[in-house]
Length: 255
Image (cartoon, rainbow, N blue to C red; front, side, top):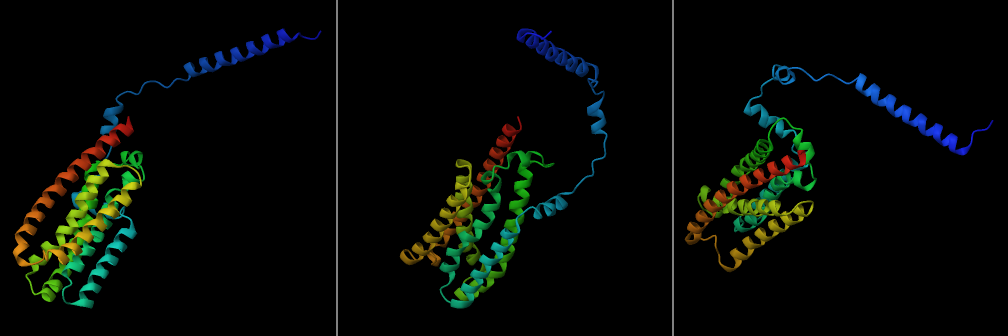
């Protein structure tokens, strides 16, 4: 005899219930036991140590190659300006310095730009250590390049080397300071455009200041020293705030 529609539905429902019951029983039967002394076992595993110098050098491999290339390209522009004009080139070199700083800033805000919080959480080292290592590498590389340029500019401008260094470091640090402030306020790829705008603003100020106020004259040098001291302190404070904010963001992403 043929089964009625209600009987077929009842049999199908009963079969599905029996399968669910079987799955639950198998899950209980094959349930993995709770691990014993897991934390002690993991703590006793071998952990190869790494020194501070080795750690910093390993971070150099994670900095994009185009950042190094752009740094060298901007430095080549500075050298070309110096060698081409040879006179009254200080303000032109200072106008290019913000774009030199922009190459380092882009590397710093890369995690915020591409939303790499989850990836950074998987790293062995803290976010603050990684940021410090990468910014230290780029900053040291830029300073080494500029040390080659300071004597040449001092010779052409007939001034002391450390005066030239102050005039070039102030726009560099002004760009990094403004860009770090923006990186704390904005998320996403808009940061790149804001950093570029900061570089253009600081570069324009060098040209306007030279044309209107002649602020590279010796009588204004005391103000340049004050600006350098304030920018050094401001960059250190903004770096600390950016690193703390990055740590909080990554902790929230991991919860």
